[in-house]
Length: 397
Image 1 (cartoon, rainbow, N blue to C red):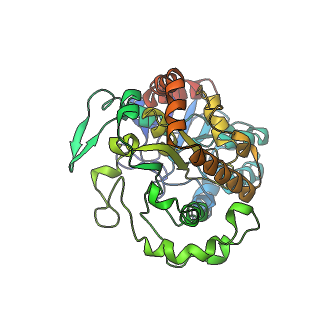
Image 2: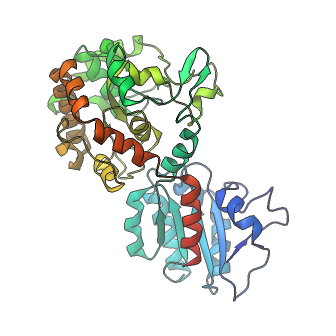
């Protein structure tokens, strides 16, 4: 198997230079097995590692490039056109739609087009003749970095950067009930969560990060008939008065602070709180693209639930993690309607808070083995191994 490169200086200028970058596929395999001309004999991978999201704009803004690209491979079934992104994976449906149109236009054989993605939902597009290779790459990336602080903490700006153990959770003085990271609070469902915390007088009992706001937010997006979501707009002015609240890193003052690196996590956030409300990157896109927010809780032995796409919590179970059924009713997780799902998960968060601090600690003590097992399962994953597996998958196409 060889990786085709369009440019002689392929180690500096990748394929699709205006919208792509060099990826781990290149570093781990392609650069050692390059080819600069297409032929009809070798198994050839033409890899395009897309920068940012794989969305329709990638194809729409580079229309002539893609027309030429598909024309070149239409009579070369030995050439596999690969689109890869290991860190982003939300809302890829329009991107797949464009690929299918191009595939049909040039009569490209099934599975000559390959997409490598974090997006579990994208596997459904295999029925349209596109080969999808899905693995939780971002998860593996986080694990590889967390192994560096698994047993030894580091200091940064007066904070301890490390991972929490079960005995530390039980023996640490709690200052708040909830922890919730919300990097981008321009997303409506994250705003709804914060407004709900304000409405129910829980905001002061929570560590909640608010790093980015939208000055042009349309407050009408908050309108809902769901019980937990009614009248949230009334609290929007209080949300604005909260200003920015920094937990992991300082925005907008220090955009490149080391806190923004995925390999770091502030230990005290987990030791000083009882429960983690995880607002995932994707909530209404059916992406099942879990990010570091979900996996950090597992590594830090912290109880949590995910506010994300339909079946986000179930997806963790398929990865080998045991759910906390005796604390959380996950019925909300399978609700397709986004507002109903959000309504029900907020109701579940209310129930958890009403159980009280003593109940949560008692539950934790009774579930130590499960919590440890989930943490151990976390460290069984590896990004580098996922890349090796992906290269093997490509060889078997």
